[in-house]
Image (tube, rainbow, N blue to C red):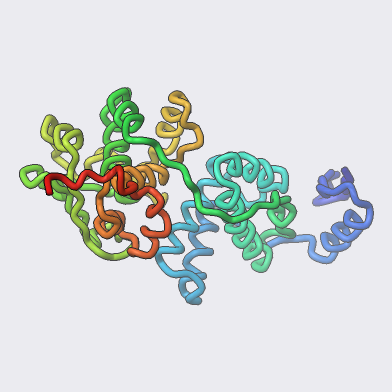
Length: 323
C-alpha cells in the first residue's frame, strides 16, 4: 500500500492512497496537488437527501424510485457504520457486497450500483476525490428469478412457534395474505373487516402508495381471522404503532428479527419477499385461480402465470366433486 506524506497547516500528514500500484499512486498524488481542497461535505443522511432532491428536480428519479434508492443508501451507512461520505473506502463497499450476495447476488449488485452512482455524484460536486465503490469486484452471475417458497405445513409451524405477536403478525400478513414489506409496515386497523373475513388494501393512503396503485381485497385464512379477533387494534398501525415515520423508507424495519427467526428454523435462504412467493405458490398449488392470486398480489396475470403456473395441480390432483 502506498502512502503520501505532506505538510498541511504546519503539520505533517500521512494519507493512504489505497493502492499498491505505483502508477496509480503517482496519479493520485498529482490530482491531490492540483486540487488540495475539497468542497465541504455534510453527514451521510444530509448528502443523500440533497442528492435525491437534486435528481428529482432534474427529473432523473421518480418519487417512488427515489424512496427505494434512499432506503439502500441509508442501509449501507447503517451496516457500514459510517457518518460521512469521506469515511467510505473500497474495502467497506466490497465487504457490504460480499455480505449481501450471500442472500441474492443480483440484488447485491444493484445495491452497490446505487452506492456507486451516489458517490460518483459527490465526486462531480467536488466533495470526494474519487469513487471508492467503482473498485468493487462483482461475481459473475446469471440473472434468474428466485424459486424459493415455504410449503403450507412449514408456514403454519413458523407462525405458531413465533416468539411474539409482532413477528407473528409479520408472518401472517406475509405468508397468509401475500403482502409486500411496505404493505405490512403500513397496514392499519381500518383495513380489517373481520366480520366479512377480508383485508382491504387501499391503492393509496397517507404515507403509503401500493406498487400497482390499485386497491385489492384479500380473504383472511382462519388463522389470520382468529389472530385479529383475539386482540384489540387501536391504531394507527397494526405493526408497532408506537413507531412513527422517520427518514427510512420503512416506518419500521423488521428485517433483522425476521432473518434471525428464519435462520433459527433452517430457512436462512428465505427473504421477506419470499413470503409473497410462498403465499402465491401455496394458493395456486391448492387450485386457487391464478387470476385471483394475481389480483391479491397486485401483479399482472402475465407475471403471475409466468411465476406460478408450474404449481397448478395435475388433473389427478384436482377434486372435481360429484358429477
